[in-house]
Length: 288
Length: 288
Image 1 (cartoon, each protein chain N blue to C red):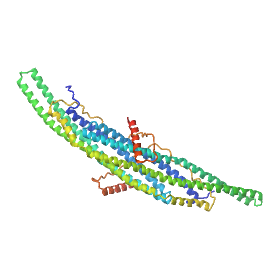
Image 2: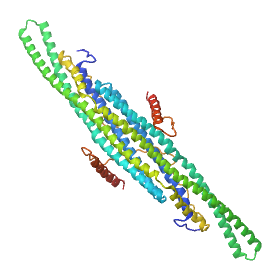
Image 3: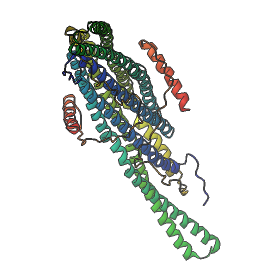
Image 4: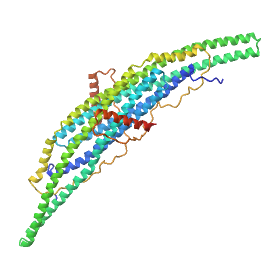
């Protein structure tokens, strides 16, 4: 049985459809899962910056303190949206891609069944051919073999129709799902980026309206105290240089814990705001 | 010399200003560098998805092929903007923060000098006091000690004025730089997110206009060939299940190579587009 299938034979079309779906949906799934994990890492780093900014704000003069706090607040808001992005990617992109594993397995089983039935048809045909050459006069045997061939052919036809239906549904579903999954990916990203633009625009305003002079006067007033009542007290050696992270440490592997995924079906604007508020509460609880 | 400084003494104000700047600028620098690295990882993962999409497109029917190619193209465009974001963060946020290490060291040296001179003034005062108690009649010694005190006082006054000037400049520069660096951070992020919204909007249109029916007819025509000339050829066992990445592998640590940073000073719209085009060409050359 050394029959070579042509590149574009119908069987090949079916086989390749399943094989490519398995290969590429698998790749998309693991790459998008990694993409989502990296997004979670980015969120963690920004959360860390938020914390550092809040600490720093406490050491600053009133205007800078207020400005840095507002900026940290905005940065935290972006991370809340990023968290929502991560959870949506998991629910609407990664989960459906994961499910494809089982779906493809089932379709592959159908193809196997078809091949088995097809092989049987060929076997019966070969058997009949042999009989006709070896014992052309054995009418009874030949008649029996002919019946077997007919039965096998009917089997093959039925299975072929079944497979045709399965493959049609598979392909239709696959193309629809691809369109939907990528559209969902794009929508999730788009919503996040749009929210980020909105929040950062407000952060920009905050930073632009920072009043340097008030802080500088505050600082000068405190510093000039030294020369006002020149008391010549020695400075204690508290200005020791601590071990500081000026050099960049190797990238620590960080866990990317994720909140419980509560995905609302259709996200209208206000429901979304609510969801983000919820996430925020959860995340803040986690950070404390 | 067990003089305790009050929490808000002017010296403390100066010391804390420098110590906090060192601590927090160091933190901001390393956290923002990590944030930038994570952004580069995200870019790498998305680049990988672009490559997989392009490979997949080649296995698909004409409409899906065109749609997936357009989508991959848009996704690649977002990564080009992300690359620009990474390079700008390095140039306009991380580099200036890094430079603060040296700046702070210098200011710390000024404070040390001030403390030395101040200590000397106290030492001379104490010496004079002792002389007055021990040998109140030794006019010559006392006169000498008085001269020393005067000299040390003049020294301290001069150094105090110098330090005052240094600290004033330092604080002014620090507040200005903070405002500028965070504003630059926000601007860089804002530009990236705005571009992403723009590109993803176009990607969404592409995906929405995908024509499923044409592809499905194409697929059916190829598949129905089987039953048109029902040749009962066996399917070869090429549909073997390859080792596939359905399970998620541990997150491989990836290098984040960065192109040469060519940062244009003021980025007007078209210059920016050009810059992104350049980056893209560089990155594509790297990927090939």
